[in-house]
Each structure stands twice: as structure tokens, then as C-alpha cells.
Image (tube, rainbow, N blue to C red; front, side, top):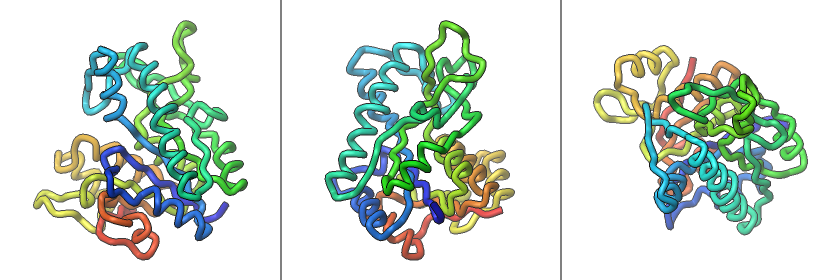
Length: 260
């Protein structure tokens, strides 16, 4: 249970030549304890469009009404989660796919009524992750949560949550040694447009305030800071590079390290 690494992967890093799954299996066979958290927003959008359900975003997050929540649950906890889990197992790894609902892993409250069924993480119960890790499995976690706090009586018990904060909160709850975000950029870019190799917490917060860091990178930074406060080493790297994850365990290749 020591030296746990939490890996956040997004659909934008996958492609026909992607090596992430292969790297995950290799690392597990080398004895690394890994927890994988995934997104899948692009796949959700595709299915909503296919089903004729409109999609609206506010500040980069999907407004989730009840029909959208049903699709989000089916796609993230079903299709995307099981495709990743199956890919790991087919390549010789040992993985179990779960969601934040299973074992009451993630508990949330509604973030903002304007956003609908979008949650803010309030509590992580890592017992199910610890049991899987002790059993030699890689937990593959989809970003859904129990709507367990301040839930209206007629509301669903499942709520949609951004995968980035889930990754940060899981890393913090497990006391993970490392949190790695695999993204589709070289790292955190400064005002010059070039990736910054090391970034302090104060510098990151100032860059968010000034607008240099914006959009989808903000929840990644906030998740890193959450894990950083709990003692994890946090890294944001380019997951499109061949064997980026394997190289990360061998000393790293580019990307941004956040520190206090």
C-alpha cells in the first residue's frame, strides 16, 4: 500500500498509436501500485448528440439535467470505464472498473443549481480502492459520485463530477506518493507560450488569477494543489508522447512539476 500513484487520463490523449494502456500494464508487472481515474467528456457529447439531447457548457463544465445524467452514467460508468478496464486486462494486466458510486467511494453535494446534477466532492471513502490494491488490482475509476449530501428527496442518488478533482481528492485520501495528469499539451504554459518545468503553488494561483492559466487546466491545477497539500508529488505531462507514462517513472520527460 506504499508508493501509490494516481493517474488521470483523458480521452484526448488516446489515439491509434497511444501507449498509455501498455505502460500501465508494464508498470503493474513491475510491482507499481496504480489507481487510474478517467474522463470521457467527448464520448458523452457524441452520445448526447446521437440521442438528440442538447449540450450546454458553463465555465467549461457540462450542464447536467436528468436526461443528460442518464447518458453520462451509461457512457462513463459503462462504455468508457469498461473499455479501459478491458484493454488493461487484455494486455495482461489486472484491473477492476468501478465508479465513485461503488463502495460510496466519492460523496458529493450539488455544486450549483445552474449546473444541474453536477457535484462538488465533499468526502472520499477509499476502502474499496485499498481492498483492490491489496488484492493486486488496478482500480479504474469513472467520475461519478453519490449525491449523498443535501440531496432533495426526489433527486437521483448519482451525480456527475469532473474527473480532475476526483483524481486530486483520491490522491489525497490515499496519501499517494504521486499524482500524474496525462494531457494533450506539453505541460503548463506560461505567458510566453512555452511549458514551465517547475511551478510553485503561489505562482500557479497567480497565473490563474491573471488569466494565463484558464479553461480546463484550472481544475487540473486545483486537483494538483489538493494532492500537494496532502504530500503527493504532482505532475502534468503530455500523454500523447510514446511511452510518456513509462518515461515518467524513469525520471520524467518534460511536463510541469507543481510544488509548495
